[in-house]
Image 1 (cartoon, helix red, strand yellow):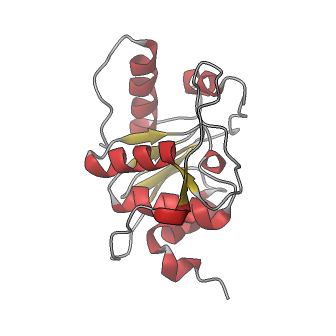
Image 2 (image 1 turned 120 degrees about the vertical axis):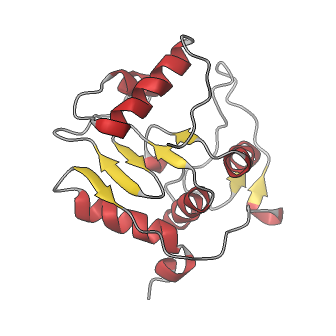
Length: 178
């Protein structure tokens, strides 16, 4: 029996809405269940890894490893300290290990962090899915997807436009959960 619904109730609720909303894209309400606030992974669950060396773009770490690298722990800690918008090109970039993905989304939602991907906007109150065709990722340049706002509406579109401005250096204001 799958223990994830009980272990990660917020993430389970989120992924349930995403799955149900996939055929009827747009905005869908999300009701997060009351649950204890999860702690950051620690001890043997955390490993130190170097940055990639290519423009220090990020760590090189196994996508299926259940452990967290120190860079991800720092990002999660920052999200818990000041709820913000966490941008990742796809949810699978958090991990391809299903348990770790659930745990990461659980932690972010528990700390009121908005999660933005190329095709989804996940907030503690709602889930948005790009209408029409989903945007394919360019793993060599994940930021290119941010410039395509086709199929985005409302808050989803506004957050993407704000993030695009910030990344381009036009507007250095912090992105906050809205």
